[in-house]
Image (cartoon, rainbow, N blue to C red; front, top):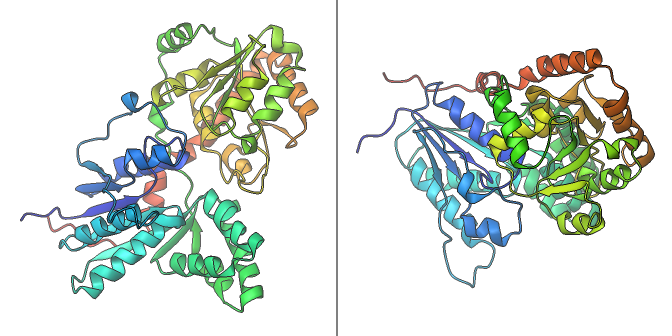
Length: 424
């Protein structure tokens, strides 16, 4: 059997999940094809499993195709109903073992420590124990929910055993990286707390080994947009350029959607601009009920990746008033950087978690949860900001966000990895 000279495997919750990190996987996979990887695999979950989990999903009939050379694998579960939660994980682990059994130099990248990093570590251990001797280098990337949801939940609930298992699995990889400086700091702080309670020594290792790799963005999808396509997309939705304030994100309390809808009711500009809420999520039905009698609030739950950029470009302002919640803190804010690339009206957000790293000094900042200040900021941006300032902000924001171009991020991340020379 002929094998490819070099392979990249990414374990992640991929499309159709609405999540910036599924986009990360796509972007790294696409760049890998231009950097000497002949075979790129995205190892993810069956659609039925994602639907059953209640995750917000993109329209299945409008998913962007991957380039030839990228294979999305969704292994079926292993076992029957007596293995309620581990069947899909076993399927993913088993498929990864099969890939590692082939004599192909491989880089394995996991996004989300739970469960993807555990899948990766278990597969490598199994392949080596079976005598396959895989030529493999592993990278574990910690994203927001690894810290805000998993580790902090363990610490809050006193489940130190789960926290120890997570850190042990994380540190078992060759390369450790975090999605932002904020996330890295949170990992170290959490490790210090576990060390204090349990007598472990995770913090020093994390401090020494964890680097930062920002989310990779396909900047070409947001730059130099066709203005006619923007107008056509808006017309199809009954919108006009600069005639709406845009919220495009997961519709959840931690994203500040309740604050935004409440603030919109107080805005002076509401007679001039509509509020467009684009996305799905756990708070969608409740927020729709809140705005049931307000014809100025429009909900779009079927926006695909192509339309997303066009909506960003045409808005009078983009608002993401994210706020810290026990189960989630915005550890970067990929949508913010995407909006900065697309242009259009100014960004209004908060300095929550890693959002400051995403926007630099280019956004209008309000305090999380301050509804009055949020309303005033949107009014000022829509009604009072001079055209010259708006253009200056747009240009400066785009220049800043170019640092997150997927090629630059990929090269920075993989420059740390010793790759087996291409035999060709």
